[in-house]
Image (cartoon, rainbow, N blue to C red; front, side, top):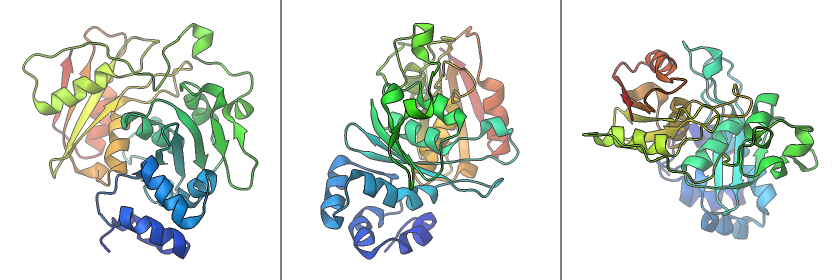
Length: 296
């Protein structure tokens, strides 16, 4: 069976009925680290697992997607959309870049679902308790504090249980939430295909506080392209830069973050904040020097 190398150890440790059910999906090197609702139904029927048990069983595969050159501490998360799709997430660290550029597993799973077109999450399953940063990040979602949080050996609880007396978008009279469908309507003249991916990401970015919309597109050495959208937060610091969003999708798709050949950042002209310096610094730490910034 031809499977992405990162899954070998975790897959070998799965119960036989689950590994047999998952084998048709993982047999290809380009497994997208997600299962559609139809895939989920097929696996549940073959294994007898319900939604929650399946998400827990998939955590080792999600954690296998971690990129942890600094901590070597792998965290996996599985987000379940109201569509029934399951999306893997994993923590990501970038040697040579500031710690603030780190991506947490919950952020990864949420953003992965968002970039795949999911508009609302029913639950998120994670193998370690969400930190305060992630609790605040998830409070920006269309699901709000009703989002179910599943942890090993604990009763299911909502985000509201983990984040009581929360501060969020409604406290600032924000009605457009993370995962709502938006199109900001920006355009570019004479843009190449990679720039158009970044523009599309910018148009779907979530920046209701600064109105500083931005998007990033990455091209790997093998020619694959990935877009990422900026995601702001009511508390500002837990926001996710567009580069990290693009790197999440790249990583979940089985590509190497150290093999980015070219990048394009598109951001609003005259915006209050800019992603340019941080994007360039992080990409250079990853070995990418071909970075273009465009104003829309």
